[in-house]
Image 1 (cartoon, protein in one colour):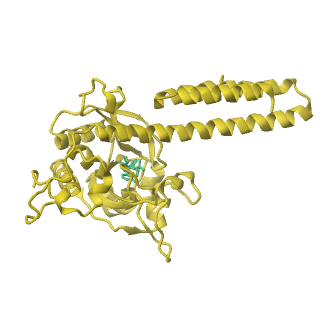
Image 2 (cartoon, rainbow, N blue to C red):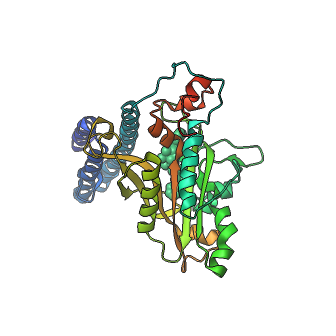
Length: 350
Ligand code: FA5
């Protein structure tokens, strides 16, 4: 291998090993793969080489590029998982072994959080929609601007039935049906679409303290004339402040989902330190909670809505994760454990 390439690879490995924050990864990515980055710089040297040398050198630089890209992606996932674990571990917790009165029935914590969210959105004029758990490929992916073989499908491998249907991997799978249900009222009578649709989702996942193969999300959409990101921020802020019973600050960061443009990750100010910075928010003052964005024109069109006239926002809240944060449940698997002595502790909101 070319000496410069070997040296660069070594320097990259050292830099990556020293990165403890996701924000540092972006800096590393730019310094190696950016327009003026070191790997890109190597390509500029190609002009000085003979055609034969170019062939080997070009191949080695490309291999380095792939190596750097993959290694950053892997580290990003590692750091995100570690951050989530730290966040959950630092929450006030409940004791799964406390003996309690199991003769009285109680609601499941996810049901409690779901109903709380539903009540808040109901007061803001949203309808609550139900949707099936078995859906088609069109509903779960194609209608959401995710054609066959789109890389976004890799993140949401799920369980397939022999007839080609699948267990929905995201509540977004109901979006198309909701738009079709209300498109006429929107366009002919001027009634805005305001709907939330909570539901069980399934993914082929390795389970750990914060990932399950079966979990709940709650999707929300609003479509009307002149809907903007400000509306999205307002509704999310109101709902979260109600659920956590305190004023919650939110911020948006760019995020990619093929069915929204622009897409965001919505963060809330850390509930532990109030935004001052603590170990559970990695001293940033923010926690990642809910992906969202402005509905992509292709998705509106597929739903029978004219994107030239109407705009809208969509969000996909992780309800299971919200329940964990609200009740201090450190291991997601406790929620699916079926242990009455554990689950019947959550009775205060009944
Ligand atoms: C989605 O599923 C998008 N449909 C959300 C969306 C809707 C984006 C509308 C834009 C507009 P994501 O894969 O990040 O995005 O999942 C959303 C939330 O579901 C996560 O933040 C997390 O809280 C929860 N979630 C995802 N996978 C799991 C899992 N395996 N176990 C528990 N919760 C999960």
